Amino acid sequence: MDFLQPPGWARPRGYANGVAASGRTVCVSGMVGWDAQGRFQTDDFAGQVRQALHNIVAVLAEAGAGPQHIVRMTWYVLDKREYLDAQQAVGLAYRDVIGRHFPAMSAVQVAGLMEERARVEIEATAIVP
Image (cartoon, rainbow, N blue to C red; front, side, top):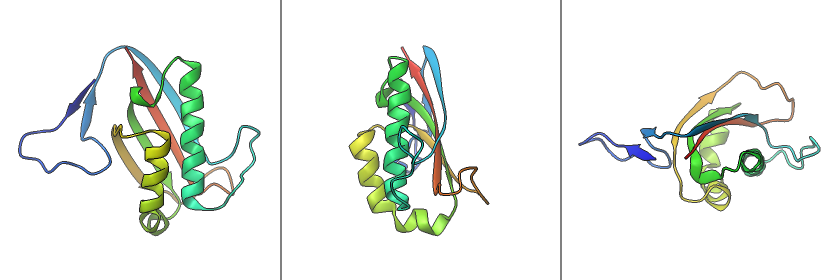
């Protein structure tokens, strides 16, 4: 896996500008912050992020993959301000679950998510060598 950083560009914080990798592609659908039984245990934004990340890791494990294989994530958030206000707690949750692996990422504010209680939904793509 090669992290792509054009010369002279400011280094991004918490993500990579690009990632080049080859191997088996694993696509993880949008994960929300509910548990394995489909129940939300919290309405807290960072708490839902933590659970969604755990859900991603669980799906990756089914393919023999781990967080270190993630090359891209897309975060869908209901409220940009809520996301920004929770950045410290989100960063802690991310490092606890994913580690210090920062793939290419996008974050998008959306008008709504399919699950009523969901505050965030996260998709991931992994490449397993």
